[in-house]
Length: 369
Ligand SMILES: Nc1ncnc2c1ncn2[C@@H]1O[C@H](COP(=O)(O)OP(=O)(O)O)[C@@H](O)[C@H]1O
Ligand SMILES: [Mg+2]
Image (cartoon, rainbow, N blue to C red; front, side, top):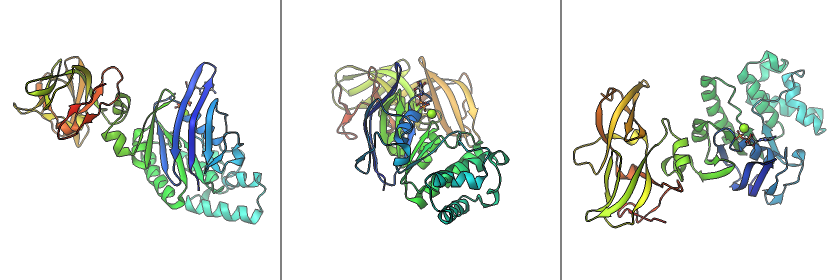
């Protein structure tokens, strides 16, 4: 069992606020990814969970027990480091056995656990090698194995795949997801790679500047991003963001901007500055009577193999359109683009937070303020 509760957790280094008052509950058996750009506090948060650094504020509990001040060995958690942190002078077998020897476990029990883990991770042929005689992927598995022998209730992983090449990373993602299912343990997994978070995690915690921007399933954070930051951190290319002013006239609520004109929905609204968010894959060529219209100028077209991305400009804003190849667009083309209203996201231009619409989707009135 490992239910991790974090309340008001913060950590400063001098004047740098690395982690700022984070509240988060990780349920037993969950695979939670901490996702965010470099420097947003992911490693610091994980190290506090592992007990490697003390928090400046807040508390951590494991299954209801306060472990804020507990030493790493007194927590039923194991950490897998980005650097692997293997002992270079020890064989694979001894690296795997190390945490158990430290605990003073009986030799027969150590052998049994090391053998079981080596078999599960296909490390048996390498047990007598030293880390420098292994490939990157094998080293990564030894680091994982060294966490597994302890049979912890929770695994804390800090970018464990970042040193692998792209093909091995993809294969290892699948293996890690399978391992999580087999072990039934709680995983807290730090990554700056949106693909890792989207493919493996049951929930994603998107972090920015030491704070939590949004917590949700992969579908929730992708389909309903809580902020412009989340919207533009996820997706390749990321969500397009175009400034506009929302007003209303006799026909209802509308949005207008440089190269943007949209009849949104019936009703009235006070004037409001917004950012329209549209994913590149939701943009299509507009018919003449389209309710939403972006007047785009194509600047470049990228061939992704099965798809193409047209990099355009709408007024001053860069806008990417992604679709099946060929898009039949060329640099210099002027093209009207649109999307379904259900695929249009609205953010407050000042707070950059998602605007919630009352009575969505039938009556899409902006709930402003
Ligand atoms: N030991 C430290 N001393 C001083 N500053 C640190 C230390 N560890 C991290 N930081 C700072 O805290 C912030 C968050 O760092 P970190 O948790 O490593 O981010 P991430 O893992 O998301 O890249 C960064 O600004 C980083 O420079
Ligand atoms: Mg880090």
